[in-house]
Image (cartoon, rainbow, N blue to C red; front, side, top):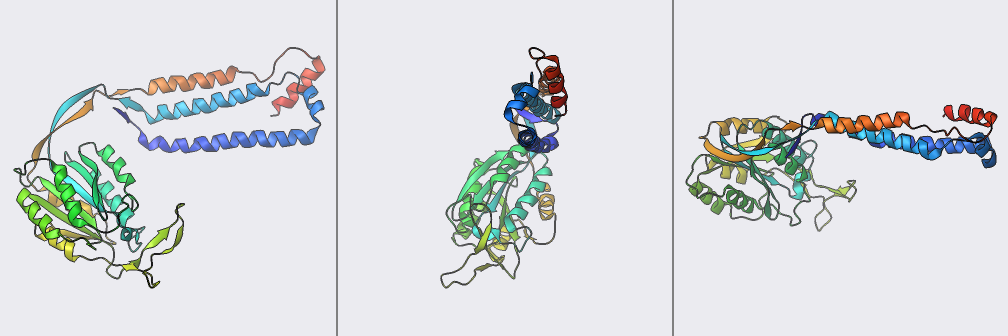
Length: 353
């Protein structure tokens, strides 16, 4: 198991393309200027002893050194052994509506992105609770099984998008059944299983009442979060490059609008002992949901997790420093052959670059 002590420094890797681009630009510009300075035959006489390959090798060493030093800065750590850990918490499965209507922008920046942002903060607040993720549109599937590894859950959260399920629609009942199956128990434990449904509420598939009855039998509490406005908004369409190309239209050519429908969401929450919340302009809606969940009876959860993490940054730091030191000792000019005047001229000219 590998983790990083300072993951916030990953952004330093964005400097690498800039550095490489600068070096390539340097070589291109130098080549143009030298060609304007004099002819090729004269350049070869002036640059006696200058080795272009050595210059390139020096730059490669420096860039490689930067790469490994950045890794050292991030601070990689490895877990040396697995241990069984007991925690007390609640099992929580979050169901995301990924139908096309969730790309409407009546909630900034759009419904789905805003919901994912709130869930990201929600996961940060979990204390010993297992969390799982379900994506649904016309059908549903388990994106992330119940886990105590919140970092892994966030990685799965990132991939949830409106295009993740090809079958369009809003099958809330199917999503609930997928969430129930994620608990994988006999249903005897009560008040320790929660489902959170995040949707604009436009249920197109029916069978919600059957799912509600199943939740009651298994002691599963459902909280629902409605995303969107009551006035509605058009559904934007994008090309493969992420550029907006228009809005969804019906068969008559009119722009389709989608509005928040609370009826189904309120029903599944109230009949299973949960609550309904509206995610609009207000913030920290899911923090209020967790306050309610935190009051529930908590069960003992056993899980394996890595322990005894050891820092491994020293390896990358050493490699990075070796590359940097090697770069300092590699010379661009060879001190042999040619007359003294040519060497002096070449040295002066090369040093200017």
